[in-house]
Length: 169
Image 1: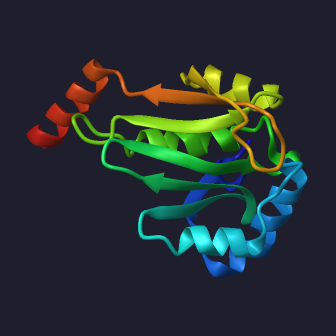
Image 2: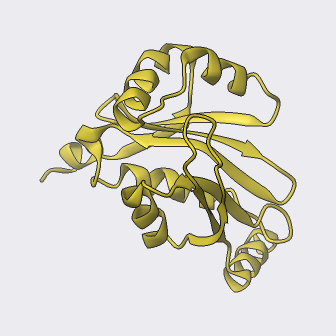
Protein backbone atom coordinates (compact mmCIF):
# COMPACT_ATOMS: atom_id res chain seq x y z
CA UNK A 1 0.00 0.00 0.00
CA UNK A 2 1.39 3.39 -0.89
CA UNK A 3 1.69 6.16 1.65
CA UNK A 4 -1.01 8.11 -0.22
CA UNK A 5 -3.47 5.24 0.12
CA UNK A 6 -2.66 4.74 3.78
CA UNK A 7 -3.07 8.49 4.43
CA UNK A 8 -6.53 8.40 2.82
CA UNK A 9 -7.64 5.54 5.05
CA UNK A 10 -6.55 7.36 8.24
CA UNK A 11 -9.12 8.57 10.71
CA UNK A 12 -9.25 12.34 11.14
CA UNK A 13 -11.04 13.71 14.19
CA UNK A 14 -12.30 17.27 14.16
CA UNK A 15 -14.91 19.54 15.71
CA UNK A 16 -18.47 18.87 14.59
CA UNK A 17 -19.94 21.64 12.43
CA UNK A 18 -23.52 22.34 11.37
CA UNK A 19 -23.17 20.72 7.95
CA UNK A 20 -22.21 17.42 9.64
CA UNK A 21 -25.68 17.10 11.17
CA UNK A 22 -27.29 15.05 8.35
CA UNK A 23 -24.48 12.48 8.55
CA UNK A 24 -24.56 12.46 12.35
CA UNK A 25 -28.34 11.96 12.36
CA UNK A 26 -28.03 9.11 9.84
CA UNK A 27 -25.37 7.37 11.97
CA UNK A 28 -27.45 7.95 15.11
CA UNK A 29 -30.52 6.43 13.42
CA UNK A 30 -28.58 3.37 12.24
CA UNK A 31 -26.95 2.87 15.63
CA UNK A 32 -29.68 3.27 18.23
CA UNK A 33 -33.20 1.96 18.76
CA UNK A 34 -34.14 5.30 20.32
CA UNK A 35 -32.04 7.89 18.44
CA UNK A 36 -31.60 11.52 19.45
CA UNK A 37 -33.46 14.06 17.31
CA UNK A 38 -31.76 17.00 15.62
CA UNK A 39 -33.32 19.28 18.25
CA UNK A 40 -31.80 17.18 21.05
CA UNK A 41 -28.36 17.38 19.45
CA UNK A 42 -28.62 21.14 18.98
CA UNK A 43 -29.93 21.71 22.52
CA UNK A 44 -27.05 19.68 23.93
CA UNK A 45 -24.36 21.30 21.77
CA UNK A 46 -25.52 24.80 22.74
CA UNK A 47 -24.58 24.11 26.34
CA UNK A 48 -21.32 25.69 27.45
CA UNK A 49 -19.34 22.54 28.25
CA UNK A 50 -20.84 20.22 25.63
CA UNK A 51 -18.61 19.35 22.69
CA UNK A 52 -19.27 17.48 19.45
CA UNK A 53 -16.58 15.85 17.35
CA UNK A 54 -16.71 13.76 14.21
CA UNK A 55 -14.35 11.13 12.86
CA UNK A 56 -13.74 11.24 9.13
CA UNK A 57 -12.32 8.55 6.93
CA UNK A 58 -11.77 9.31 3.25
CA UNK A 59 -13.48 12.69 3.79
CA UNK A 60 -16.70 10.97 4.92
CA UNK A 61 -18.16 11.25 8.42
CA UNK A 62 -17.61 7.77 9.85
CA UNK A 63 -18.51 8.41 13.48
CA UNK A 64 -19.21 11.04 16.10
CA UNK A 65 -19.10 11.68 19.80
CA UNK A 66 -20.81 14.18 22.04
CA UNK A 67 -19.28 14.77 25.45
CA UNK A 68 -19.43 17.12 28.41
CA UNK A 69 -16.45 18.55 30.24
CA UNK A 70 -16.70 18.48 34.03
CA UNK A 71 -14.15 19.54 36.61
CA UNK A 72 -12.72 16.04 37.16
CA UNK A 73 -14.14 14.00 34.29
CA UNK A 74 -15.24 13.82 30.68
CA UNK A 75 -18.77 12.43 30.28
CA UNK A 76 -19.59 10.80 26.94
CA UNK A 77 -23.24 11.51 26.12
CA UNK A 78 -23.44 9.91 22.68
CA UNK A 79 -20.93 7.88 20.70
CA UNK A 80 -21.50 6.02 17.44
CA UNK A 81 -19.71 4.72 14.36
CA UNK A 82 -21.41 4.19 10.99
CA UNK A 83 -22.01 0.44 10.44
CA UNK A 84 -19.81 0.49 7.31
CA UNK A 85 -16.84 1.75 9.35
CA UNK A 86 -17.13 -0.42 12.45
CA UNK A 87 -14.14 -2.58 13.38
CA UNK A 88 -11.86 -0.25 11.40
CA UNK A 89 -10.36 1.65 14.35
CA UNK A 90 -12.70 4.65 14.00
CA UNK A 91 -14.19 4.24 17.49
CA UNK A 92 -10.76 3.51 18.95
CA UNK A 93 -9.40 6.72 17.41
CA UNK A 94 -12.24 8.71 18.97
CA UNK A 95 -11.63 7.21 22.43
CA UNK A 96 -7.88 7.84 22.06
CA UNK A 97 -8.68 11.49 21.30
CA UNK A 98 -10.62 11.74 24.56
CA UNK A 99 -7.92 9.94 26.54
CA UNK A 100 -5.40 12.48 25.22
CA UNK A 101 -7.51 15.22 26.87
CA UNK A 102 -7.09 13.70 30.33
CA UNK A 103 -4.64 15.38 32.67
CA UNK A 104 -3.02 14.50 35.96
CA UNK A 105 -4.86 16.14 38.89
CA UNK A 106 -7.48 17.65 36.58
CA UNK A 107 -9.81 15.64 34.35
CA UNK A 108 -8.52 12.14 35.02
CA UNK A 109 -11.41 9.91 33.95
CA UNK A 110 -13.96 9.34 31.24
CA UNK A 111 -17.44 8.09 32.11
CA UNK A 112 -20.44 6.95 30.10
CA UNK A 113 -23.62 4.95 30.46
CA UNK A 114 -24.17 1.86 28.29
CA UNK A 115 -27.49 0.03 27.93
CA UNK A 116 -27.48 -3.38 29.56
CA UNK A 117 -28.55 -4.88 26.21
CA UNK A 118 -25.76 -3.19 24.22
CA UNK A 119 -23.17 -5.94 24.58
CA UNK A 120 -21.15 -4.72 21.58
CA UNK A 121 -20.59 -1.31 23.23
CA UNK A 122 -19.80 -2.90 26.59
CA UNK A 123 -17.15 -5.12 25.01
CA UNK A 124 -15.73 -2.30 22.88
CA UNK A 125 -15.23 0.04 25.82
CA UNK A 126 -13.96 -2.76 28.06
CA UNK A 127 -11.32 -3.62 25.43
CA UNK A 128 -10.13 0.00 25.62
CA UNK A 129 -9.69 -0.06 29.39
CA UNK A 130 -13.12 1.00 30.63
CA UNK A 131 -14.63 -0.84 33.59
CA UNK A 132 -18.24 -1.12 34.74
CA UNK A 133 -18.41 0.70 38.07
CA UNK A 134 -22.14 0.55 38.76
CA UNK A 135 -25.64 -0.20 37.57
CA UNK A 136 -28.14 2.62 37.07
CA UNK A 137 -31.61 1.14 37.55
CA UNK A 138 -34.30 2.14 35.02
CA UNK A 139 -31.92 4.77 33.68
CA UNK A 140 -33.57 5.44 30.32
CA UNK A 141 -36.75 7.42 29.79
CA UNK A 142 -37.77 5.37 26.73
CA UNK A 143 -37.58 1.92 28.38
CA UNK A 144 -37.29 0.48 31.90
CA UNK A 145 -33.84 -0.79 30.93
CA UNK A 146 -30.85 -0.44 33.26
CA UNK A 147 -27.52 1.07 32.26
CA UNK A 148 -24.00 0.15 33.22
CA UNK A 149 -21.91 3.10 34.35
CA UNK A 150 -18.52 2.58 32.71
CA UNK A 151 -15.37 4.47 33.54
CA UNK A 152 -11.86 4.86 32.18
CA UNK A 153 -9.42 6.19 34.74
CA UNK A 154 -6.05 7.51 33.65
CA UNK A 155 -3.26 5.57 35.30
CA UNK A 156 -1.56 7.87 37.78
CA UNK A 157 1.91 6.81 36.65
CA UNK A 158 1.17 7.55 32.99
CA UNK A 159 -0.46 10.85 33.89
CA UNK A 160 2.50 11.83 36.04
CA UNK A 161 4.94 10.95 33.23
CA UNK A 162 2.89 13.02 30.76
CA UNK A 163 2.86 15.99 33.15
CA UNK A 164 6.63 15.75 33.62
CA UNK A 165 7.21 15.62 29.85
CA UNK A 166 5.12 18.78 29.40
CA UNK A 167 7.07 20.54 32.15
CA UNK A 168 10.41 19.49 30.66
CA UNK A 169 9.59 20.74 27.16
